[in-house]
Image 1: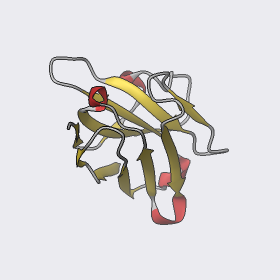
Image 2: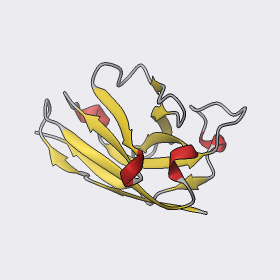
Image 3: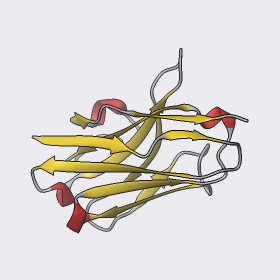
Length: 125
């Protein structure tokens, strides 16, 4: 089992920045691919970005590419999501999720076995 806890959410003005953290406990977290997803009210949960365990390859959705950066510190069992140039449309509950490498697509919610409880990000003037 892997337990995930997100933190770092809050309210920020457009153009601002936030850094989310996803802290893991349980099995060897460094072997897991970690994805970030978000869900706005009335919308489906959507993929944001992911980072592989092996070579730390990242994959970003087009909506956040160039603005969001995902990185991990395996020694701390933590994955971070640095969010810059935030827009009102980035407002959502952000979730981190983890899975062992396999055939599933990193953009699919069904690929992930473990999920955090989510943290709210609100971008508003």
